[in-house]
Length: 123
Ligand SMILES: [Zn+2]
Image (cartoon, rainbow, N blue to C red; front, side, top):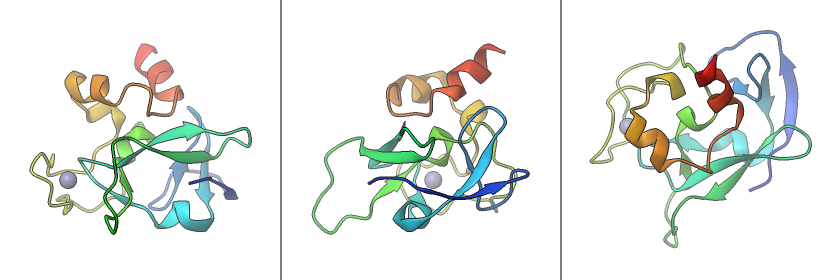
């Protein structure tokens, strides 16, 4: 699924996508409709425009909802109401950002996350 940036944002908010360490945007098209899951079917790749494309993280069954983990693109998430309602067995019960993921989960998502998250971990 190809991502398109619809609007630049001055700050993080409830519908913001983080696209660099300091930049937040609003995605347009179908990307903006994809829900969070703690056991997602898709991950993130940053395309030439700086928007996020969604890449299949595992096989997706016919009729299955396409999901991603918001922590694959946002270092922190302050505006999501708790608890998480994804319903997955491994649900974290809270929609937290990359900084709140376990080291095991970070390794599991290797190659399917926005690259600035790793830079932010090092700073
Ligand atoms: Zn969940």
